[in-house]
Image 1 (cartoon, rainbow, N blue to C red):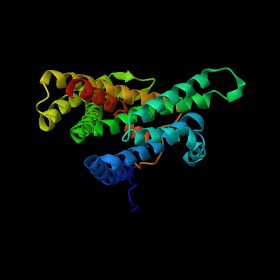
Image 2: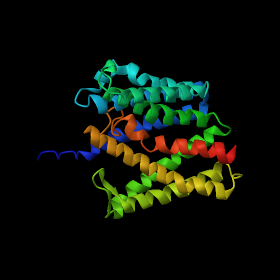
Image 3: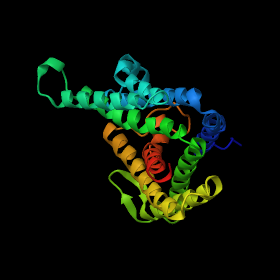
Length: 277
């Protein structure tokens, strides 16, 4: 009697759990430590995500390793993220550089060569450099560790709630041309999970924040998470790839894991600056 074939999902789940078992404790450690260790790890993640971004938009049919020949194009995003710990001006300079690069990409002059790479670099600096920098800036505020944990766990709650409810009762497609698997029922489940997570985590970490204020964050964060997820799905469809890379076995690439976080973290940072401090 021949052995039964192992379902394809089982090894995929094995890799997914193994990656999480290694990555989550490391993430928890650097969030706890903060300071330069946190900024450096965030910068490394930005570098790898930048490689995926440039690779997907410019050379998706080549191996990811080919993107490292263009490291100067996306390395600035990593510098922005790490430098944010030293001074917010790193982010401001990076934003100015992104604007200049974008304007070059719009020009019709042949002096700068093809325009598409300039536009891709500008988008990379904004999407990864500026947005991920807010994670470092958020960690550096008062009680920053708690706010980072809230941002991450609430975002995970949105993703988990959307996936679970979508699998169980999802019927009505949300954006079939962008991501056929996403449903309105799943989005509702994710929204409620994220809303509850923000309220619960805030009560645990900082019960002195007025409920009216935290309710605003709870109402907005799930929307930001869902929008970030949809944008990443749209980009991958335009790139013609299923996953940003295979750097995180079972999870795809760093962009696949950052999609919602890149939208929720800036929201939490702005909230803390305007409503808490």
